[in-house]
Image 1 (cartoon, rainbow, N blue to C red):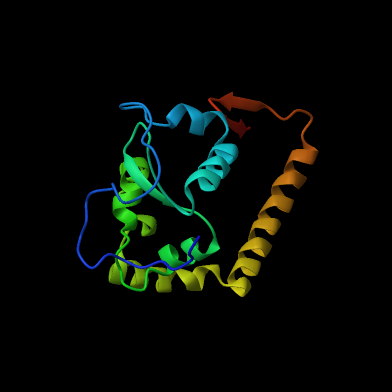
Image 2 (cartoon, one colour):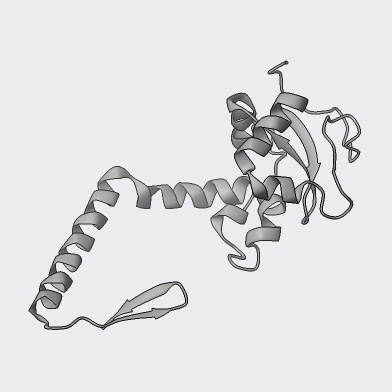
Length: 159
């Protein structure tokens, strides 16, 4: 198996040159994937290698496995992989203009802005602020005789 990832010289919308099987019409390999995702991925990797085509209920896609493939896709030095195209079917309506759905220069600019908020020193300040708030709230709870907990769907609310 070669770890040499390169792009075709021309756009090629056919997946005939990529190993894998699409499975059942419409459903593809969805049921096998959902029943045991890790075993499914390992079997496909063992059978077809690092670059595999497949189909699920949503779409036909190409999956790349392994650290070299992850580096190739995530670094995207030639700006050919669209996060928006990949994530829109799952997250587009929920987070329409989120950082995860931005591509190339727009994504890079906004990621740089956001990185400041997630530096270690900033995260430590956030934690201290939250801890102060939690300590105050728990102190209030400890003075109560009863704490009412309400479940709405999968969320819990305290009164």
